[in-house]
Each structure stands twice: as C-alpha cells, then as structure tokens.
Image 1 (cartoon, rainbow, N blue to C red):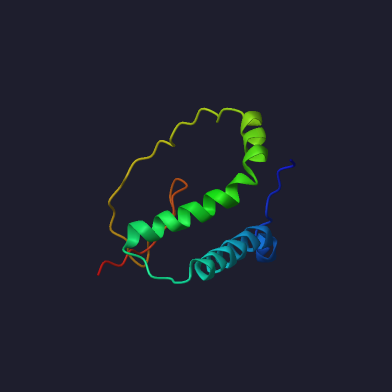
Image 2: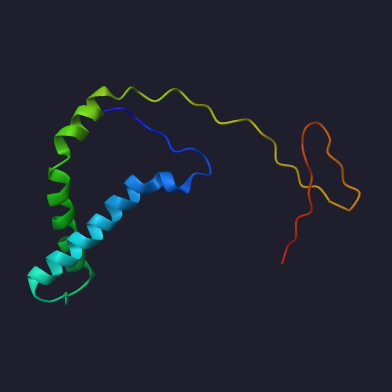
Length: 108
C-alpha cells in the first residue's frame, strides 16, 4: 500500500472516504430490507445490528489492514509546547509585542 495525503483546500480529494461512507449507508439499507423491518427494541439492539454489518464489511479488508499495521513505526516522542497564560486587558490601541498578538476578546 502507498500512503496518500489530501491537499489543503482540495475537497474533491475526499472521494475515497465519502465513497466508503456511501457504501456503508447502502449496505445498512440493504440489510434492513433483508431483515424485513427497521424496528429495534432499543439503541443497544440497533448498535449491535450496525456492528454486525460493519464487521462483515471489515472482514474483506482485515488482511490488508494487518499488513499495514505490521509496517507502522512507533510515534515520535512528543513534548508539549511550553507556554504561559497571561490575562491582559485589550484595547483598541493594543499592539503585538514579543511575538504575541493581542486581540479583543468579547465575553458574553
């Protein structure tokens, strides 16, 4: 498998994701038709129904997903950026200082 990345501002590149979403919706609708009704005893029963349909769909891709998972590398170590929270009064004449930009904050 070759990883791909969407380009910023190119919404039409989400086609693969949207196609899968549409496919799932069609599959759910078909399974409801085969079931004969769309009534469920509760949310838990409906969720179990969806889980069964999704598990069946995922079985087709399971081997490729496991192959990709085996090739994944550990995430890099990551430290949170250090910052200091300042509570400042902002006016029309506020200016940027020391690389920080101060903008009006409306509280309501």
